[in-house]
Image (cartoon, rainbow, N blue to C red; front, side):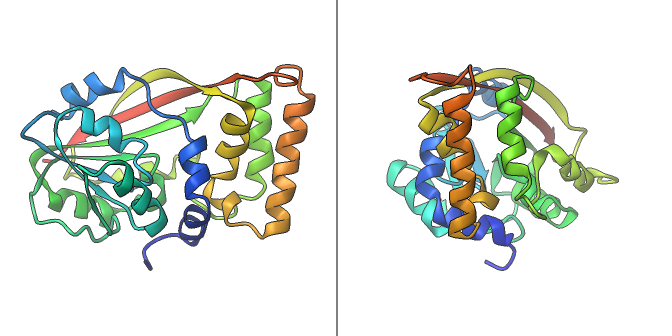
Length: 256
């Protein structure tokens, strides 16, 4: 779809399987947070915007709410629909959701809002939400206080180009001067992604949109760097299981 950044369209289409394997899930503490901060519960309708393969959607399902997932990348939406048949999975973008006005009690963007943050999108979210409805923005952010985690970022960031990134903070500009939502409130959760280096590092990094969208030879070069780091870093060498630390940042506000 034309509203989708090229890196997201190409990268997420090519690496939907790596995304599913390599992306961390979310801390268990998020479920009660969703219930309290968003009112996610039976009888309520919650939209998962930019739902991807359903990594976050499955947590929303556990709240008992009716869940509608919106995802523009066909390969990712197909995986979500197959894994979560109880969820209504729709093609659509943040700029044009195929939903009626005031049809949702809450809307969540997990790992996604930085891709489409704009006043136009906030206006579309406001259109879809019922008065007083909740908007939540959630990201798993790598803890780069560990040197090998910082090294992963160094390997990847030289290829990011103009791809929007959470860590730039540019997504916040969409809220500047906006009076249609209350002030964002932040909650933090400690989290870890535990698994093999293949899953936690290689699949995770290769699923990053702008890496997945690289030409084959450049992508292979990134993978070689990752495998060299795994083979040589003292904290990773010879390990069958590792834990990549994250901070899960959860923001929420309400439609005025």
